[in-house]
Length: 224
Image (cartoon, rainbow, N blue to C red; front, top):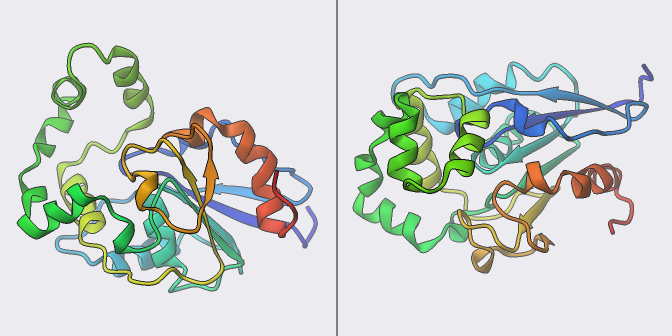
């Protein structure tokens, strides 16, 4: 493998496993893909300290970090610790001001502390609570990709998103966002690359766009 190969580390979304990137393919003569996974947080662990621990899994120098959803927030925190070539944030936010009103309200009222995350250990009950009785296809999709079912992790992760303090976008960061994202609505997002029809899970169902354009974005060439 050429010494000029670019190492790209992918971080999945909250509670998700790296299989969300199963359809992502980058030219092997130019890029080497690495998949990162969630670890269980320590009691009352700060996001910055957690990011430092995840950075221990990044062995290449000057890598590209790609993060989806909460993973997008995490890779931004990681880039404050290690030198990166570029950070790509997908279906996420670059500042606390891009969070939707319901998350800001949850922070102000601390309602996020009362979510029934204990149900996640019985995924069928959790899915029924979250999606209702008719969303079988969605439930099966989430069962496939969401594998971190630790209540302590979920409680911690939700708090980190809702209470994130970043006020300014970091330099050298690319933001890709779907126009139909229901978790982080597009109307609150600034200065992103918009994906028409893209939802919060577009890394899975819009993978062809990413396979075509991620190499261009990393190499600073024209994007379709």
